[in-house]
Length: 113
Length: 114
Image 1 (spheres, rainbow over the protein chains, first blue to last red):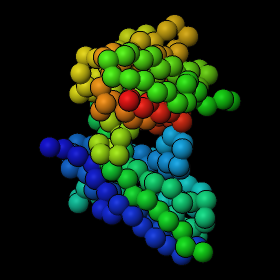
Image 2 (cartoon, one colour):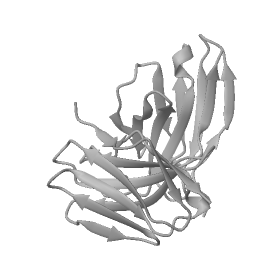
Image 3 (cartoon, one colour):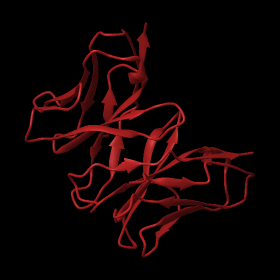
């Protein structure tokens, strides 16, 4: 069936390095993708989104890249800090007429001092 | 501006009981969605409400229901609770519930079934 998936369940990086979290999707008709960050005991927090008519979007210390040819998107976090430790989810909105997010399984990012 | 508020934060129930969870969206937001998060299944969509109408529903049994009030506040109800209903229930809101609009989540209600 159609799904949104992440390549790695865990990722460990050194503080100050750049982090890259990957996500693959199977629905070629997908038009809108969102990255969320979930810290322990909290709900998912919106980070950045991207529409299918774009291949790159930048925020503060974060960049999302979308490759529609291979149905892949990635979240890049620059100069990773201890506060970036969390589980990161990619999601897509599956319903053109409403809102219905389909989430990947998440990648746990751990920062080594 | 206050974020999405969910009450209660924690709840313990026994099998067979029913439960009602509450969600207050961000002020001005008209769309409210509910999700279930478990370690095994991850985040799964339950339903979405807009202007007091359910616009979309996920693949959950009829024991799961919801409603939205005229002030956009929403409740979800689970009847005849089963052990497998133990989960974090998350509410999310957005301004107009449009396709290209991100949803903003509350911190959830942790439901434990004994």
